[in-house]
Image 1 (cartoon, rainbow, N blue to C red):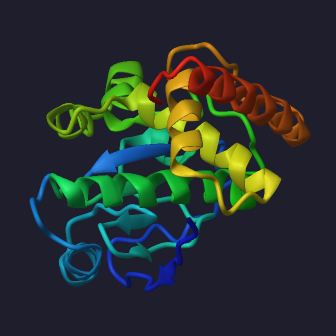
Image 2: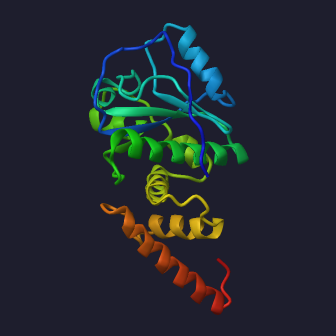
Image 3: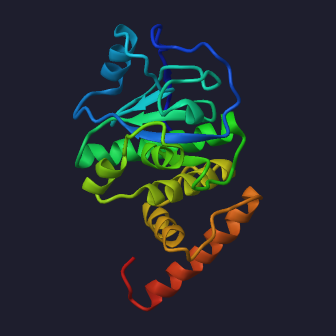
Length: 222
């Protein structure tokens, strides 16, 4: 699935300082049911000395700052290293849509803006991890938001890696069952995420296809 990014830059709460990001931070807005448009307008209309690069909700993505401009989202150190994105707080089916768009956006930024193709626990961090590492903020998002919806930050990183591989390979029609197997296999450590060569992804698809065929022969449900 491909999504679109709407640019609607804020005018207030901006540093106007260029930087060369080396990774990304995932946040959660903590304002239940507020859309990306509503969040953008709040940051644009109020003097709060805070900002991020984009907001993601269940049906759209709004970019609020240039990717190469420092934001004010997670403390001095992280702000000078990372592109930062807020996932809007929706639960249930809408959470799934927020998650999917967030995964896609992170992968897109990694590929097209950062030119990084391997996700690690240092170049894709949660706000909670940033707080623990540098101690410049006390926020713990999106830990609770993810947990309430049966997800973890590690699963988010794994999903972003899978999506990076997919985007690099140019595969737009991955069957849902295959995506499930990929997600589960990467999360379980059975398959190493592609680290260098995007063409290596074809090997993973081949192996998974063979595994699926064997499971079907055995009458196992995938």
